[in-house]
Each structure stands twice: as C-alpha cells, then as structure tokens.
Image (tube, rainbow over all chains, first blue to last red; front, side, top):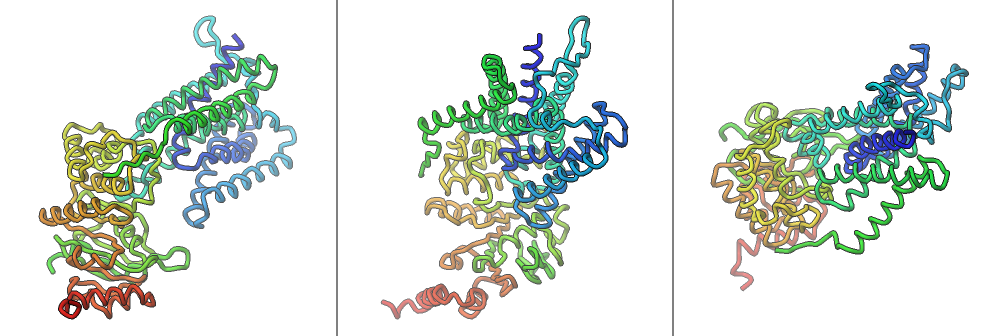
Length: 286
Length: 258
C-alpha cells in the first residue's frame, strides 16, 4: 500500500504541475514556481504566529497568500520599474525568502521548519498520516489535499481555458478586445501558488520545479496543439513518477531525486529523437 | 470633416522618463486608408497601442467614433506587430483566427457554427483556408501576417488598426494585402496602418500621419507628402530623403529622364 500512496501522491503533484507548467512555459515564466516555493516562508511564519499552531490549514493559507503576494510584487517590478521579468523574480523572492529566514531565526526558535524537508520533500513518509475515506480505505492526508487541489485546477482550467489561452498567446491583442489580462494573470498565478504550496510540502521545491518545467517541455517538443500539450504533459508527468519511484526503490535512493532525474533523462531522449527526425521549421512559400 | 473616426488630444506616453510620443493632436477621417509614418523609434506603434488601450497614456486621451474606446470596442480590430508573438506557440492557424470571435461570444461560451463560417470566410479572404490546420510555427512571414489579418477580419469590425502589416512579407502577400485594403475601403471600412516604406506611401494611402515623437503633419497624402515635411519628419536621414525627392521629381517631370 505504501508504494501506491507514494506513486499516487507523486502523480497528483505531476498532474497539477504539468497543467500549470504548460501555461508558465508558454509565458516564459516557469521559474515563478521556484520563486513561490521560496517566497512562502514569511507567510508560513505569520500563519504560525497568528494561529499559534503548525496545523495544516492556516499554514496552507499563509503560504498560498505569501506566494500570491510574491507574484504581485514580481508583476509590479516588471510593470512599474520596467525590470526584466527574470530579474524581478530574482529580486522579489530572495527578498521574501530572506525576510522569512530572519523572522524564523529571530522569533521562531521552536517552529518546526526543516530545510531538508523544504528542499527535498518527504515523499517517502507520506503515508505516516492517514485519513479514513470509506470503510477500510485510507488515504494519506497530503494525497487527499493534492487530490482536492487537482480537481480545483482541472475545473478552473477547463472553465477559463479560452481566457488563459488567448492571454498567453497574444496579450496585446487580448487587451484590444477588452479582455482583462490582469485577471487572467492572477487567476493563473493563484493556481500556480496553490499548486506549488501543496506540492512542495510533499515532494520538495526541486521536484516541483522539475514537474513544472520538464513534462510541459517534453510535451512541447512533441505536439503543435496546446490542448494535446496539456494532456501529454500530464501523461509524461505520471510516467516519470512511476518510473522514478521504482528506480529509487531499485537503487535505494531519494524518490524525489530519482523522479527529477527521470524527467531530465526523458526530456533529453525526446529532444534527441525529435531534433533528428523532423525539421520543425518547414517554411512553405506560396 | 464629419465626425472624426479617431481623435487624439495632447497625447503623451512616457516610457520611464523618455517620451515615446509627445503631445500629439489629430483627427482622422472615416472610410479612408490612413498611413502612420515616421523613422524607427518615432512612436508609431506606441500611438496605435495607446489608441487601443494596450499602453496607458501619461497625459491626454483618444476617442474613437467620438466615444470612449470601451463603448465601441466591438467595431475596432487591432493587428499587432507580427514580431511581438511567439510563433513557436503550439497552436494551429484555425486556433489563432478563432481568437477573433472570442470577444463576440464571451470567453465562456463555445463558438457557434456561424462563428466557424466567419472564420472560414476570413481565411478564404487571405488565401489561407488550405492552411487552417497547419501549425503556426510552419508558416512563412507572409503567411503569419495573413493569419493575423484573417483574425482581424473575423472580428467583423469597421475600423482596423494595423501595426506594420507590410514588414517582412513576400511580394505576393504585399499585393494581396493591398487588394484586401482596397476591398475593405470599398465596403466603407477605415484602415489605419503603420508603414515603413516611403516609396509605396503615395500609392497606398489617402491620408497620412507623419510623426517623429511629435506630430509633424496630418492630412491628405497629396497635401502632406512634400519634401519639406518629409525632411522635418526624418530629420538628418538625408539619403532616404534625397531618394524620395528624386522619386517625387521623377513623378512630376517624367519627361526629363527620358
């Protein structure tokens, strides 16, 4: 059962990240996932101080709002200060992360925040905290939360597909037709923030980035249709999770590490095959 | 002039502290092909963008059909510069042109068969129907521009603002666009086009806006396409100017060179 829990958890993270990541990759802002997963720290601290507990819900809310705050600051730097988007990502999240570290080291001596866990996750221990579902069927708490988020993400993207698609492809044209691109930006960012926050607790920041960028990048190499890209990205995310898990078991290494490595390996293989097979640019003159 | 289709008042856009356009005032007539010309970096694109609300003016305002843009947005189509887009985006020609119908149905409803007919007609108009399923990364520059025009046509507007539709396209596409512009003008539509090539300006446009951050001249092509105004617009770029004045001379006194 433990195998099943770990694989299911990894797959749910993979699906959430693949969907959000596909939009981020096309918007050239995938590193915002990295930014959010670090910028959550002050949010976690304040949630801990205000609620006085390390229970999940307040921490989750604190972390997610801190993540959204990071995206607002990043957008503000990019728009108002006319800073390159990667530079504003770098400036904003290191600032928020640093504030979090200072606050915790000064006031949160007994806060249970483990560097190791933040970076590499605790996928192997996901089944330590089980919740009863129906009768004898139990699911780990993390998995349950990820499942709920997965449903939210799939519904939200289905509902807002056109808006997300047109504002990702051509923001200026979207504005010209009266579409509020700010709304769609923060709609996506809220999804990314939610995904990142619930995912990195179970799989760690590095695997979150690997899931956000890897499977969408693999899918991008294989299709010229964005809807197919979303589905393919999810499929590759799931494939990498399963292969990665058994690889980790076989070699007795970190699961998150093995999955990240498998993502990288599959990307390389797909890249070599696609670049040798078809000439992607096949310009037809009239 | 009847009600001007576009008017700008004291329009200034600053990027940081640097003005992209400075204190521009003009009125444009309806039903004509209007060129916006000026040297590189003279604020032509910024002018279109501020009319479309893509860029917020620092001061001043623009009106379209004597109203706020939001009141008449459904009548106005914008064709952004082709280079602003990532043409490696995983989307088909049909996907892009269908975006021209999104705002008509709203973002949360499916497109109807009427929309599909309109998309098909628009593709036909630019001779791209055979490419409907093609992925956009496999298009030539001219074909990309046709896709953008088809998207604008699918919006079924009355006023078209086009940012450099002739830049980097093949001759066949350029001729096709010119024919299309004539056809649209014949249907009473107004076309405002950012353009680069001085050689073709006189034959393409009824009306011209010449600018270099500030407005230099705005009026009928026959009135404003003069040596003096072009020198004022293009400043020190004498090689271009002398070429053009040479051409003007050729046109006026063809007998001299025979």
